[in-house]
Image 1 (cartoon, rainbow, N blue to C red):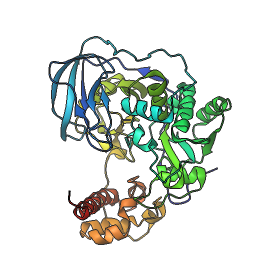
Image 2 (cartoon, rainbow, N blue to C red):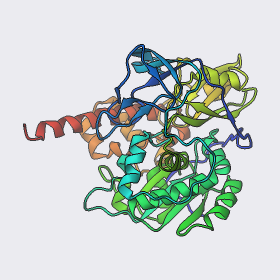
Image 3 (cartoon, rainbow, N blue to C red):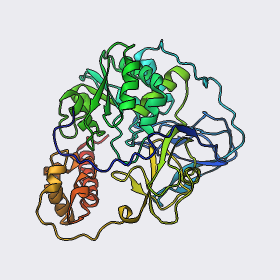
Length: 449
């Protein structure tokens, strides 16, 4: 069984909602839509207070090449374009819309009819994806049109679809693959056409045998698409780990990208969104969100409009249990704790995880015992204990030399530490600081205009 060659851990899977079909969450009365739902520059608002909008209408335009359009998830009246607290309590610019019915913009095909033939050129496909505001829906939120724009001098050799979903608890991709498999496979053919390749792989861990069997059956009717079962191992959903598992190729350290080894990687839910954008002119205004937790009354997979308050999803799953200690945007390994449940669902929100009791409490840190478990667990071949220590000592030059920017922030180091050291917290801080130093150095060296 294929997997990546270095490090990794196997946390308890806790896929509590894997057998729960996708349900449609009722539309909220009010939505708040952040202008920064993606990597890169925030989008620029194209509406103002008092404007009437339709579902699917463009309300914010990409602020640069590395940015993404944003569309209204409901019809109604814009009540504010202002700073609003996000899930971590930080204020960011958002558009607030009071819903009035559900009237859609013209030109969007809302039918469930499968459209297989794609008449568009590669350039037209990428343009439609950009117009629809598609970003990576596995959590990274990298603008998809940027990923598909292969740089001059580079050549794509294959497309890899990430159906791994290795994060504990989360099942939104799993259910999407089961319930929208035909759309996903047609989306794969569209991505293949966009980057000019004849081979595509769909990587799925073997704890999802139903999804593997289902997509193998569908893919048999399409040329050049192969479903690849993978050994269960976290963080196999990381781009570099998935590429290594499927192709055996190692992506070099930053600034190298997957395209440097001929691969273009796209998340399973993103691929379905690509199909809908190209074949149906459907912008990215909704997504499947897993709402889960051991003490939650009814874990679910909910099809949710962007901008819906997280509290509405939790209410649909039976409400937050009294004994709940922590609500996480994402899963327990890479997600972030929330302090504001009124904050909205965004394009990168694949799950809301409610933790209770012992699993929600961070243990008191002790002294490092030099066991090197964190080194063995690191899938990037780094030395987490050293990176953590040097961050505390502000040894920025040493951190850059030791490739701290290669860290994918998977949390394997922290989860294996017998001393409960907050390794990932320190490494995140060190990585952010070093990346800022590198950017400042590049800006200083750039020729003055």
